[in-house]
Amino acid sequence: MKQSVQRYSVKIPKHDIIDKKVYYIICVYNLEGGQPKEIKKRYSELESMHQKILEWIHIFKIKIPMIHFPKKKFLFHTNQSEESIIKRRGELQQYLNEILACSELHCLGVIEEMLPKDPKQSTQKKNDQPIDRRWQEIQQLKESYLAKHGDSIFSLPQKKIEQQSKQQYIFKFEDHIIFDDSVLYTIQVTDTITNKSWKFTQRFQDLRDYHRQLKTIHLDFPLPNFPEKKLVNISDASDLRERKSQLEDYLNRIFGYQTIVESDIMVFFIAKSQLDGNEIGCRSKGTSQTTLENSSIKSKSQTTIEQFDEDHKQPRKITC
Image (cartoon, rainbow, N blue to C red; front, side, top):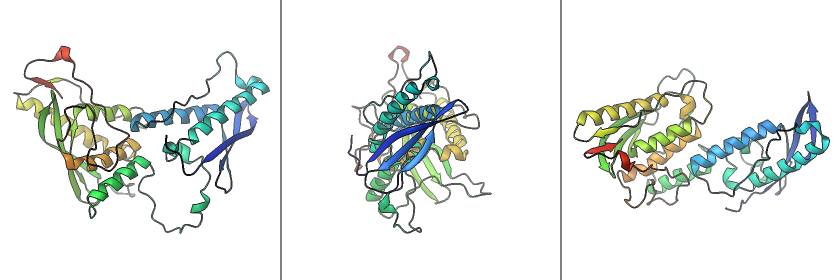
């Protein structure tokens, strides 16, 4: 784990009981100075925050020490005893200090909103341009891409302007190759706002993994269905055309929802596709993960490629 340049300390000195519910008074201190930030949270709110942290750790494959959230008591409620509340305060204080010791998590929204202002940033001009996205991994991908393509535009999802109906990203499935008993699709994506287009490659399993991550976030609408896995006869061109059409339709449908477009999962998908796009079809036979061999960083969110089921292998057939 990297040592954070900016360190924080958490104390929970007291609590309030309102309508028989315990609210913990959390004070977050920047050890470099400045005013502490005080927030009031219930146990359930902190538990929800913990679940979000676990989701993002899984999405971005972040390697940090195991952090345990204080377990809920089932035999009796914590708020039935002052002694239990004080004990829970100590457990939550230790948990939050462990979380803030991980600098990799500081850019996650639910963590960032807890942090006090950096005294070094108080003198910044208000007209300074903000960072496109706050997640550290996305910024690293952007910097790595621009280092290789200095004058290029790096496309990232933008907030939709009111009354704007145009979809920002349009996907088109073009060619494909057969690799390790799977189809590797070449996908062209066009940013209709910047007019930038690029190509990258993905397997069915890659896209399905992103879909599974999207299913973990809260949406106010039904998530479009992902095409079902099936065996495809490589001698039948119509099978592959149908599969390409299904996947192309899926990507264009989900990118029609602005909430999905702006999600950390899809922001990362767009950012990484541009960096990988210079290595179309370049995948090492010795690994089952997407790699960034020519980039200046190693991605913490390598997409897992599921192994083909040997029991279902048939001659001249592949999974896609």
